[in-house]
Structures are given as C-alpha cells and as structure tokens.
Image (cartoon, rainbow, N blue to C red):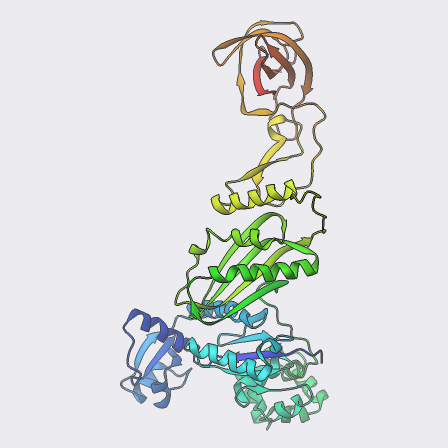
Length: 510
C-alpha cells in the first residue's frame, strides 16, 4: 500500500435526476407520482435506461423492455434519454468536484473517482469530507453514495454495496471487501453469472479460491471478465492510477463562501495576496492566472489572464481582472472561488534602487500586461527576429504575451529605423554607373542624391524564392534636404533574368 486515499461517488439516479432538472427549468415537469422512464435503443426495441421513484416503486427496472413495462404499468410515461448530454454533464461535474481535490475522473456513466490523498484534513477528516460531498451533491439535486478506500476498486465496491459513507483502511480492507457480493469486482454480467453458478457469490469466496485455479480458468480473459485481475486491483496488488482530465495545479488558493454570491470582485485582492505569498516562498513567479468560479448549480466558469513577464505583484495581478469579471456567468450564484498560478518560473530577488524607485523594465512589463488585458492578447504586438537575410522576412510580429522564440543573430549591417511593408518603386532620371541613381522620383517628388554608401548585395533565398528571382544591391543615400533612404536595385543588366534593373525604396533612416 502507498497510503493513497480514493473516494468513489456513485450517482445511481443521475440520468433521471438531470432530466428532471432540465424539464423543471423549462416549466413543464410532470408530477412526482406519475411513473416515468427514460428509454434508449436496445436489440429488440427500446429498453428502460432510467426510472423515477414512482416507476421504481411500480416494479420497473433498468434494462427491461419498454413494451413489457407498459404491460406492467399502463400509465407509464416514456421519454428518450440523452446519453451524450449525460456524459457531457458528468464531465462538467468532474471539473466541479475539483473543489475537494485536484485529481478527479469520470467513472463510467454514473460515478466519479477522486484521489483525495492529503486533502481530507482541509475539510476536518474523511468522515466530514464525505458528509460535505454528499451535502453539496444533494444541493444539486443528485442522489449519491460515497466510500473512501486505499484503492479505486475497493472504493467502487463499498460505494455500491457497502454501508453509507463507508471508510475503509488498508488494514481492514480484506475483511470489508470479503462480505460484499461478487458484483463489486466490476465484472461483466456474463462473468458474474458464471461465478455464481460456481458458488462464488461474494468477494470473500473468490479470495478463498486458490490463485492457480483462477489463473488457469481466466488466464486469457480481458480485464472486465477477469476476476483475478479485478481482485488484485481492489486489494492494491495491481496499480490503477487516477489520470485526471488535466494536470493538477501547482499553486492554488481558494475562498469558500458562507452563502452564494454573484460578484467575486471583493474577494480577489485577498486571493491575489495569498497566491503571491506562496509564490514568494517558492521563489517563483507566474505568467498566467486562472480564476475558477464554482457555481451552486454544478457548473463552473473560467477566466484567465496572462503576463508578458514573470510576476508576483498582487496589486498588478488583481488589476488585470478589472475589466474582465463581467464576462463571468454567475448562474444562480457561486460559493467557491479558486485562483491558480500557471506557467511558473524562478524569479530572483533583486535589490531595489537606492533612491526608492522601481525597475523600468518591470514598469514596461506591467504596462504591456494592462494594455493586453484591456484591448486583447493580439492587439498588442512586439517585433522579433527570424532566420532570414531578406529584410522583409527577417522580422515578424507576435502578440506581446506569446512566448518569445529563440534569439536570432542581429544582422551585421545597419538597417533603417523604419522598413516599408512593401518596397515602393521609383522612377530613375539619371543613374551613376555601378552606383545609385543621381536623381529619381518617389512619391511625386524629385530627389537628388548628394551622397551614398554601398552597395550591400543580398541574394535570393533559393530554397524559398521562385526560379528567376533577381538579386538586390542596397544603397544608403542622402538627398538634397538631408533625408536618408534605403534604396535597392533589383537585378543586373547582365544577369539574364529579365530586362533593365528596377529601383525601389525600402526604408528610411533617422
């Protein structure tokens, strides 16, 4: 045993209870005393998928044919089950259950599995934790049975066949499982029927059978039809990890509310302060925050903000949510708020300036974060270098909150402070041999070159450019009024790739 504690939550009436909630919201729910079932397609016609309390009292059981149940109960009302909607609702319930622990998964179509190892002390122990879980689920209108044990299989069996809110330790697991029926081993109906015909009606009876006999009989059987493997899982001899839908948060703080509220704004400053204290103690900062609102109707709402640099400033982090909280749908209110830090990284503690001022780089990062939070992640961009010697390809713009790519070498030659998106062709009036034009017309103005430097030859990228692409000779020129331009000639007279060379303005120097 590894000291793990697994909670199994069985929701035996989840389909019918979810269907009833949906119908009640639409305002046309049937009376409770009318027998009603949800049907699904079967091999010989519709079969009962779930039944309400009145139908169960009338003797209607899940899996029976609807036509046979109508003969038993002529007043039976039938509606079709939404199995895909039930699975989606159960997946949302998995995320909602993260209020108790970070590792949760869906268990079939009628249950949840929670790895509560190390989490029960936050709720006053395992007994109080199970009561809290059952209470919260009942507020959602869901009937539940719960159990906690060292393994998934043991918790599953106790939740369905054991006492109410069963708590099982590693030392008494064999005794408590032994008294349960063999259906607690999560076997398919055919295997359960076979074991019962062999006289093995309890898990204890299966334990008493020599292991070699079970191995010979079920050596090639798959997991759902192999009682030996299922028994090993229940007793902890065979690993069965709880693989959550997403990684557990590394740093998270929560605020549990005494009654449902609709606005989390008053609670955010304290949550940010507590989270930044944890970051400070860990010597880390975060680049992303996730705010999760756990609603009382069983749903959750998410809101995320990002930073351009690692931060653990509570005032700054709280300010990033200022214009976004109105996007949260509170539903019927929420009673739990969680704030999680993601994209963590080490932050070195730097001594402040002697004059009490702050770091200019930090102020710039805070400004970029506020602009991105106000106008959107893609509205604020920054230039980054790319591996290309073609000027218009050597730079690209990324959202300021995106991860920076690996640093590229800066070109050795001087580049203009402003580069035109598209080079603009000029009309040459007089050209200097092997040099730039003596005069040219650009943007309806005549420019006379007074001095120049160059050329700098840039060849095409043969692995990207089309065949026949001509090389460029770049010149830095200054006209009669002191304007400095970046001019290039496309092609040569003797290159055999077209007619006369063409001239273009590609940028301006300061």
